Image 1: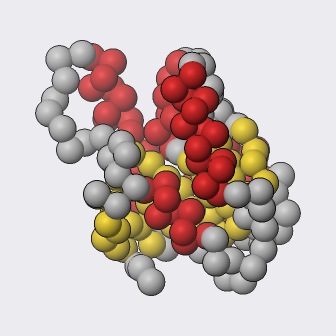
Image 2 (image 1 turned 90 degrees about the vertical axis):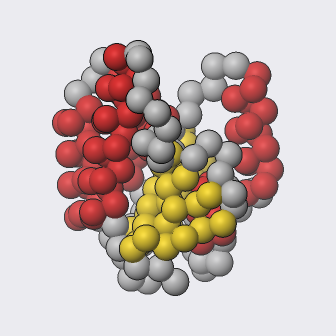
Length: 172
């Protein structure tokens, strides 16, 4: 298998995760799902359980809300990986007041030297208006920067709206 890095962008409930999973389900190796979400309420728990049911029992799930680079480094050579999602990961870094630039750089370096087939899922948060809230503006700026860096390093990038994917870079 040739190393391939894919990024799937979209809004909330756009179908981006389902599309990203569909890119992986045809692989011959057992896929890994790296979950960045932290379950803090029933709504999130229900969403996680629904995603797990849809994916089925063949996926290996790794829960890593902060150190994505370390999680990826521990996977077997040539693994197929879905990271869902970078938006929650950024949220977790900000919540814990961690060095976003440092963690992002570490992730980019890890992806560059890995031999993994990785698909990243991330929200495109820059399509709405400008918030009056300073933290929300900071988050949108950081998310946009993170998305640009991952997209630049990716072999292919898709944008999903209303469940419909559009390839922005590379493609099938």
